[in-house]
Image (cartoon, rainbow, N blue to C red; front, side):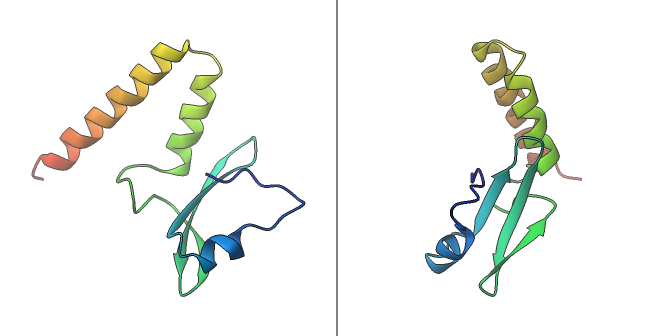
Length: 91
């Protein structure tokens, strides 16, 4: 996860060491970028974690501001369990 800083452009550093995916948060939304041919491009969903989108990550961040920590963690665990079951069920 990268929280952008105007003082340092980190994406070229991440690309140089081969970080395949970067999540970026700018205090309003989460973006997911995938490394393709040495360049980061915005993508709709994570290739590392099936079902994770910028929208979902934004919802988790928003919930973290209103829920108790234990409740927030439980909600993420419940979501992950639902994802696992969804992916394991033949369609």
